[in-house]
Image 1 (cartoon, chains in turn orange, purple):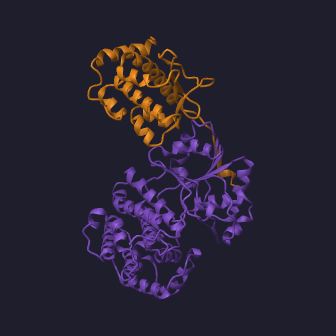
Image 2 (tube, helix red, strand yellow):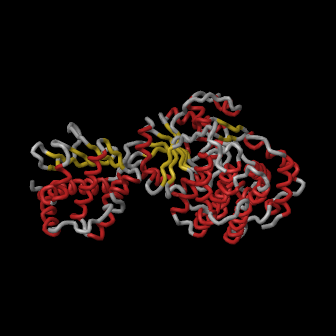
Image 3 (cartoon, helix red, strand yellow):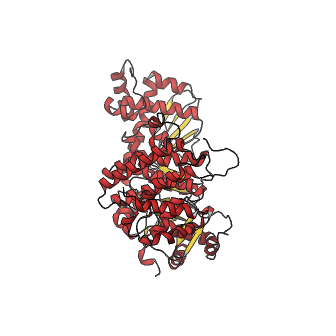
Length: 180
Length: 389
């Protein structure tokens, strides 16, 4: 027996729909962070504690998609696209695979749970990574209805903000139209 | 009494990925082992249960092309290893993934020994003289139908029994999609084999805190999850718990020599073609009663694992082994109620009384691991022969 009759090769066929979904979610969340840094005090304070020029990325291994968010020298938070090549990134958060990203972005798993289940690789300072996770949680509270957000965040805040509805509208509008 | 911390060696080189979507981490883990073109080995039976589709999905977004071989038979031989040796080299593979249990891991370990050195190394491994050389990356994705050797240094290939400390899989993945529901009798037999390995690790004179920890985890998982896994085969958590228990127990087993019940069970299974786990389950209560009178037997430690913390807190001094035996008998009776053809005695497995004498000697040859007191073996077999649960 040569063994060849029982052998075949499995080429990587890709998962285009899932990749597209995660790419859209990352794009939207990245722009929502940019908007939330302008309208929400808690997010603003988290970024204020990070050094000027601080940039972080959240992406999926091995080939993306990703989002990059950074702080300008003047302290403004900006979404900087999905291309990591050629950019100086202080903190890289990499989801180990697309299915892990799907669990996170369909809110079956919170960012904290995904971290605890070893779905993320963090390359950078741990305090900064914790700050980014808190920012992501805060943004998800604004973007999602409470019943879903409770699944997506570690702890749903008792008082998510005095102007929650107004902030939510401003963040949605900012994320969709990209106001800076 | 806790085992002495003086002078022990413990080795568990495997990284374990367990739980939902654990398989999806394979590409990243392979990259960490400098591997990008794995060869997956499995059986035709598992391939027909959707494993090819599962593995194709796991690697779909990885950019890696993987080889998928489905021709591992129940009793593999060296001819197959030779064919796979050529296949692996010709197709440019750089690592192995064993998808399945028993013979799949046997072939994967033998092939890995041959590939990492020379095909003649199999003889050295059979003689126990193989040099401690690092082998190629081997990932094991076992299921519930374990043989007791998957995650250890041992493998058997027709007439060859191989031993290579570095053959232990580097990575073990336990995912609900590959730890599939099996027939009730198969699940029960594998779990009883795991339980035997764990319990005998507690009773071994060379036990240490680490083997105790692994044996404790294995025993608790089996006692808590076996009935659920049998009643509700679709219950993911209980299946994954049993698969983890097998890893824990085999790691403890790999660090200690085999116990009497394990060796006897293996020897009897060879003679009468019954799953060794079923036989070990029937022998286990008798084996424990033999240990009861020994001063050094850690009865309370064992009962903590078998009965759990709450019951442990209320047992009287010196009653640990007796209570553990009661629990095992209760478990056997429950298994009998769930599995109609579950054997009630070693008389039900096709043995004749005249076979017992020969078995006493044969048990000493299992795996060439340690020596057994023949009078004790004979006593145990006689007791088991007389008993019907």
